[in-house]
Image (cartoon, rainbow, N blue to C red; front, side):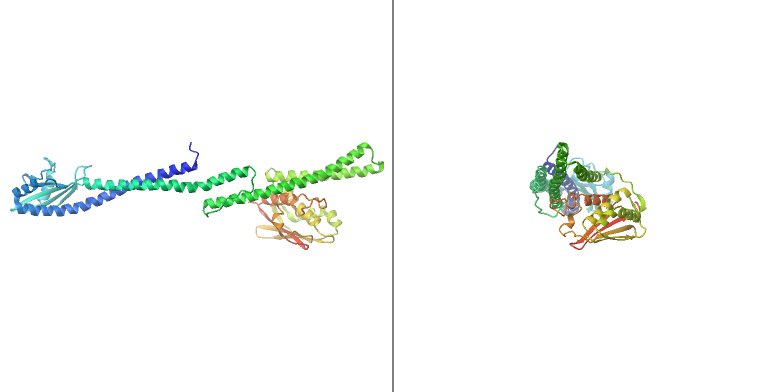
Length: 451
């Protein structure tokens, strides 16, 4: 098996060029051969007329002497009359093999044109003429062998020249064609080793250039993902370490009996709180992994979206009342085709963010609109806002707008990634706009009917 694409291309080009040249040679030869025969036929007729004039002037005896004096002539000459052969050129064969019907046709005044035996390089021309009040027929059989031989030599020479030049150019051009692919192979190996700084030069706008551009884009995205993974590991390590350390310390204190009886209940409450934080983090991780692997149950149906949104807000009433938030809810009856269980996670995350990042005495606005084929839900809050340079990344896994390792918001950078994935499963759309210190608006669009 041939493994080198360079060798494969060369052999492929060799095959194409050789087959093309052979076909071109055959086609050109037959076309040119036909043209040569036609030209030779006209020349032979003119030469035949001259020979007839010479025969009429010299007579039979003088004409034979003339033919005997010629060492070689490029054709055979036969002269017939009604009762048979009159004379022939010295190099002509003893028996011409002419059909008597054709001889009679010329003697009756016709001009005969036809190929002789198949495979020969002769053209038979028959011309009528009169000599001493007697009708004669002259047959001329020119030899085209030499001319066809010259044609072949020219075509063979051109064939070999084109073949040599073609092979030389193929060897050079194929190397240039394969070189970018070799670079891609090398870059891929470097990427596999973890080198995310590798980049391919883009020197053309063809398919190779597009491949290089796509490769560079892929490396950039992998580099971002790797950086987010590192940040996530650092964040999660800190988030895990803090509650684990607290739980361990309090457990040791309870075990050693250094905690007063009246404080034990408080310690147990703290242990429960830290355990819940750990459970929340692991649940979010498992949920996102399940969604990205398409292993989460997906059972869409048509249901009342306005009711789901209202119930979700009511369930979170204690949270938004704690921050004394004003909730402006105005949604008409909306039906949507979706998985209500998964969509419940979407609204829970979006409402939780609207509450968490809102200011005291702020406002949450929820609006719904019925479009032609979709429904649109708009959720806004008067919170801290999101910086413009963070907006393109907030749906990425592990991304946190708040970079410091703080426990004030208990954010792991997973909630919006879950939201984005669920919306994608529904072939919907989600977008966000924000003005720092003023407002953040999320817009979700879903289909009213299933496909």
